[in-house]
Image 1 (tube, rainbow, N blue to C red):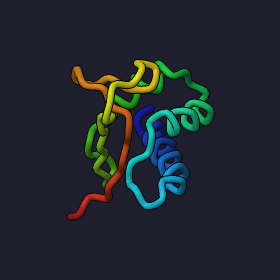
Image 2: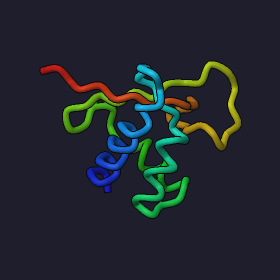
Image 3: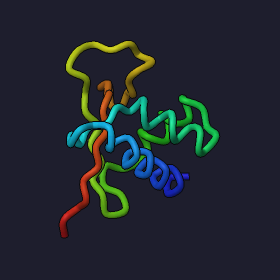
Image 4: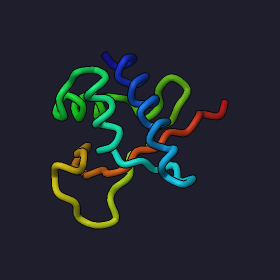
Length: 94
C-alpha cells in the first residue's frame, strides 16, 4: 500500500499546490480528500498510511508542518506526539 499511497499522495499534493500561490505548503486536509476518494479509504486509514510513509521515499523528502495555532483534532494528523497541518515535498538532491 505504501507505494500506491505515496503515488496518490504526491499527485494530490501537486494538484493542490497549484492553489497555494507559490508556497510549498499544502493543507493535509485538502490532500486527504483527494487521496481518500482515489484509493477508496477513510480518513483514519489515510492517517495511518501517512504516518507510516518514511520522510525520505522514492527520491523525495516529505515534510509535515505544524499549524501556527491550535486546530481541531479533525483537521490535523498526529505523529510522534505532534500535530501536523501542512505537507510539502522536495526532490532529494543526490
